[in-house]
Image (cartoon, rainbow, N blue to C red; front, top):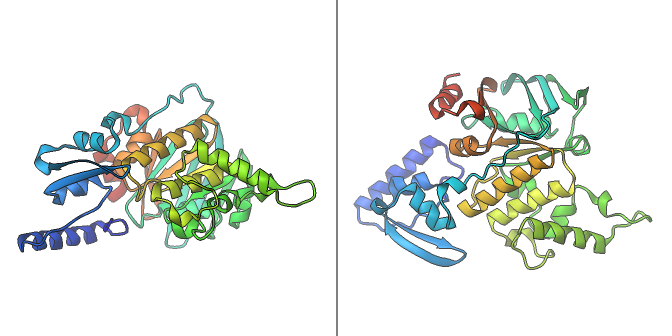
Length: 332
């Protein structure tokens, strides 16, 4: 995963070096979840699924559909499972007015409703993550107002945000979303210990283990024992632990920042299914992603952001046009 934290300019430079090495006769093994990179630099592709060799093909014999089918054993049209939310009642649960953070966020206003998935699209450094962190109380903002269910709410820290029903799945899950040395059990229950207290204000380990195991089964987290450290899990299963944490906390507004970064295609589809489940539970969902196809595949509405400013709003019911989205992100 050499490009996971690189800008596009840095990726281009890396690929230039790879092509030079290939021309010198040096063999390269390149591991990535980003299919477009495989087609850009690959000669042959070997697919593994669940620790088993599925097959090896020359790149000229493959297209995206065939490669995804090898990886997940299902066609591309099932990659973004979309649930019909038309029957759900769409009510505004969060409204942001004139959010301002010096040199980063510029007069941002928008609303989030139940019964929809709202996407935030923009280039790296556009201010998407910064907006999410301000809403979650992780970073201060200079001015602006936040309304929850029509009532103005003060959120100055993450504790207040959690109590207000907000959740943030950060893009850097290992450093900001998990305590990797701690167990799966501890990571799931950490934000809502009140849920596992007894009448004598003591933690009930039995109650905690039972409830955490329920989430492990529901989310299909691949772990033999909830006492195992989170660091022993794959990226996809670590992400599921973060999701389980916020389900355990009964969060009502969930912000996913790069929810599928560094996880395989099969795990991505499972995350998309979980996002749909949140919406069906009448929760509001925001997705921040650098993958345009991902946003177009799962979001009902997309806001584009450039230099900390909202530059456009696009609706899935009107049909997304990738060129229009990119123009709004890059030009404004």
